[in-house]
Image 1 (cartoon, rainbow, N blue to C red):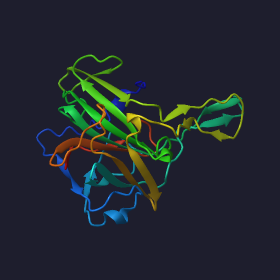
Image 2 (cartoon, rainbow, N blue to C red):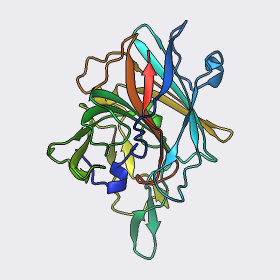
Image 3 (cartoon, rainbow, N blue to C red):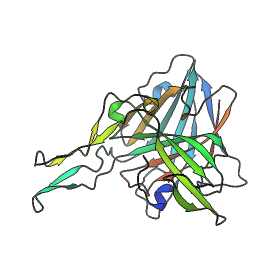
Image 4 (cartoon, one colour):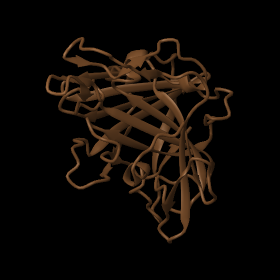
Amino acid sequence: MMKSVSRVALTLLSLCGSAGLQAQTIEVIPLHAPPVLDAQPAEWADHPGQLVPLQPLVDSSVVEASEVLVKAGYFGDQVIFYMEWPDAEADLLHKPYVWSEQRGKYVKGPQREDRLALQFGISGTFDANWLSGNAFKADMWHWKSSRSNPLGLAHDKMTTVSTSKLLRGARMTAADGSAVYVLRQNDAGSDLYRTARYSSREEAVMPKYVLLSEAEGSIADIAAKGVWRDGRWHLEMLRKMDTGHTDDVVFQTGQRVKGAISVFDRSENEDHKVSATLDFQF
C-alpha cells in the first residue's frame, strides 16, 4: 500500500535529471570468491570503486554526506553492492513513542533513522529525475538502519512513474507542465514490520515498529548489513542476479543498467541527498 507523502518526498532522486550529460559508470566486476555479507571495507581493497556526488533536495539539508563511495561485484548468481558514506553518528531510532506525563500517553518522538536507497530501472526510460516526463518502472532497494538492518535485509519496493493515471498514484507536474503519476509499492510478500500499540506506560521511550523476523517473499529478496564505525556507514546489499520475481530487476553480465542512489541522515522523507542517473555496467 502506498503511504501518503509530500510532493518533495515523491521527488526522491529527482534533482538529477542531467539532460545531455553522460551518466557516471559504476563497474560491477567479477569476484574471485563468493561474497561475504559483513560490510568490511578491507575485502574491497583491490576495487577502487567510484565516488558518486550527491545533491540536496532541500535548502539547509541535515544530511552530512556530499558523496558516497560505491563498489560492486558479482559471483555466480549473486551480486553485491558496497556503499560507504560519512555520518557523524548512527541514528537507530525511527519515530519512537515518547511518554508524555502531561498528556498521559505516548507521543511521536523526533528521532529518525539513517537510510540509503538504490534504484534500478526495470522497464521504460529510467531517469533519476522522476519529473523528467519519462515513464518507467524501477526496483528500489531501501535500507533502513532501524526498520530493516536488524533483520539483515533491505526493504524491497517498486517505483512506477507514468504519464497515465495510476490507481493510488500521486499526481505531479513534469518539467514541461504535463502530468505524471508516481506510485511506490512494497514488493510481494509479508511485511518487514508492523506498528506497535501501547495502552499504558511501559518505558519512557518505546519502539513504534515491531520487526517481523519471518518476512518472506519478494519483499525480502535483498540481504543487507550496515555497520557504523568511526563516523562512517559501511553497507553491503546482496541479492540474486535474477530472483525470478517480476517486481525485481534482472542483472546479466555484459548488461548496462541505469540507476541512482539517495542518502538520508536522521532526516524526514523530503530531506535527503541524491545522485544523478548512473550506469551500472556488468
